[in-house]
Length: 76
Image (cartoon, rainbow, N blue to C red):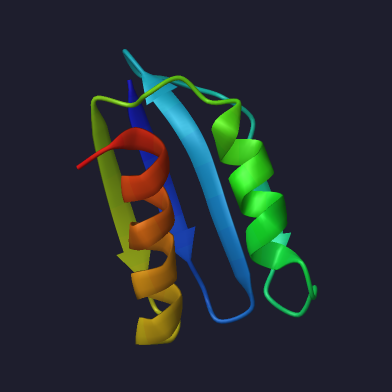
C-alpha cells in the first residue's frame, strides 16, 4: 500500500493506493487553524504504508512539516 500526498498552495490532499485501487481522496485546508492536528488524527487511523510519495507545489515549510508527521507516525 502507498500513501500518495499532494501538497498544494492552499490544501493538502492524500489517498491510499493498493494494487491500482484508490481510497477516497481526503484533504485539509491550510487556512484552518488546527490543520496539522486534523492531519495527525486522520493519519493515525491509517495502516503503515510501504511507500509514501509526495508532490509539492506549496511552501517548503509545509513539506518539512508533512515529512516530519509521516516519520513520526509511520517511521522512516
